[in-house]
Length: 419
Image (cartoon, rainbow, N blue to C red; front, side, top):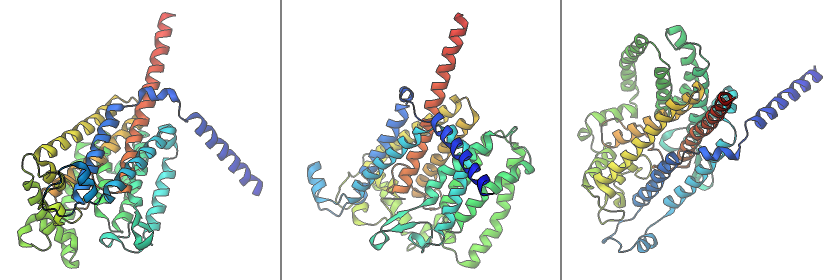
């Protein structure tokens, strides 16, 4: 028995070594690096650093005359740390490029199980921000945190992409849908147990968009939506019975003026958006809501309010244009990729970013309830920045290797035609 186990381990290690050797990075792939995509992300991220600096400024009586005076008189801790996280995220993006995306697909179930283990482990931690057991923390005062459900998004995108790509036919019946729902539901329930409904909604959005693009039956989609509508009634009754703070968030969204104390964050964010006018108040300006601390979480979830106040409608429109270009590029690349698994990977990353962008901006301006979802590449936070950069790295991985494979096949075809 012992010899058989050793033999099994040797075979597994040999197979893994072979996979790593076949999928390692080739310098020639760099010629297919998607610079427009990377530069788009970099510009948004650097703009985010400026907005984070603006959100962390203190009250002033007059605007600093120079940039150096601004940097010398205002705190730069959050902006400096965000730059560090951007650097770490870029390294993470390059690291995920090293091995081919086919290798990640080969171990999709392993990534899935690792995500489950981390989500189970984090439930044993003490409640942290927002009363959630969603963070591993360390350091004095638990100032440094890591949120496994954030990085777990990448694991789930890989797992979902592999699950959908190996299907012979689209999801057409309830029988087809149930195994996939269970596959998605296990990590979803663990995240809800934290409770982190915002991140759970991201998982659900990515899964739903993948089901939709797989070519599923429209009758099935309508049936699922009908079930969701029916479930709203018992959920609403439960929230009323338990006096849930999520119920308060919905009530604030419906009528913020009736709850002035609880809705102060949302109301002040709306005022800050309006105060920016056309061109904005500037990064450091007297009486800004950011410097007066009127908007809680203004450097994280409500960074869009700071963007609008500091740079006005013009700055907000520029940011949304950059996001449109980013999402448009991602969906364009998904259509160009030939293999289903690679296409699903890009769609998964695009879906994740799309939901984050729409939900965050809409909650800041009052169109949707507050869920605590950060704005990609803009909001302060290491876990979210690394996750987003890993997602971009995954897209780059697919694009670079697909283009290389396409060019190689084209060269072989041309050679055969000449012969």
